[in-house]
Length: 172
Image (tube, helix red, strand yellow):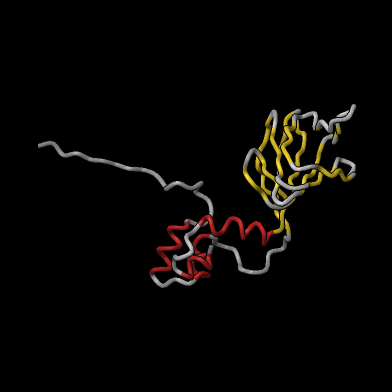
């Protein structure tokens, strides 16, 4: 009979950078502490307070249009920083960065605009923070600007189950 060899090559589902949640879980189950887990994945770093208070998360880039929405009253700020109160509802933005206000002239924002609400939906997904829309090379870039703590409260629970080993959760 002929011998069969099967070779599988891969590294999981992630991007291959940073900490593996499953790896952290396994190390925690072997008795590793959170700081040892972090030292393993992030060699040459130290633990300490974060030097930043806000983070920017790229939500969309090089888009011809984007739909923003809020179920409640919300606000927009144009490029010059002028405030515009908005009624609940949906806006479709194109690189012109204009919205129809129901009067003669559309409201033009310039090359960038900021939107705040609780929450603002971007293409149907809710986000906390301030949604910044910029025109870059005649396309739209959408960035969520929010506090580091708010970002962590939104991201960490979706990355690792709450009932995993406490040291893995601390590392996360």
